[in-house]
Length: 166
Image (cartoon, rainbow, N blue to C red; front, top):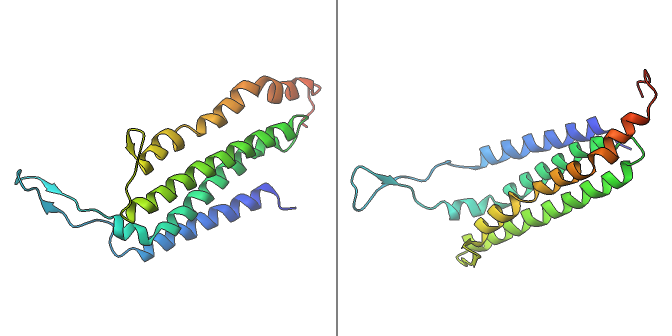
């Protein structure tokens, strides 16, 4: 079984490789500015949707590895203790939800760049996924830790005899 420090080293290395791959594969990071048709002192950027669609897999991979790294670090707290199994299940369930929302956003962005824009709620579908999904899902992890902190963490430290480092 792989220990946590090796897993995090592998995940961090994978994130670095994805960032280097994205950096090398992009021709330019910016769209060419154009003059605003009515305000001559203002420049406007063009759409990068076509160029970004070519790098969709890099974005998907980077996001998934980032979420996996987050879940792995949260699972450090679940290594020991009498409540480790229930904490692990809660964190993994939150991680699956996070992945599902992220993949939903990425799929809707791919459809958006393919010229099939769709609104979902008040915004374009990818924006709605991001605002109401990606920003809200981390609150699941906060709730997991806040609601069960006394039972999972404080109870374990109170049951250890004083002076016992384990």
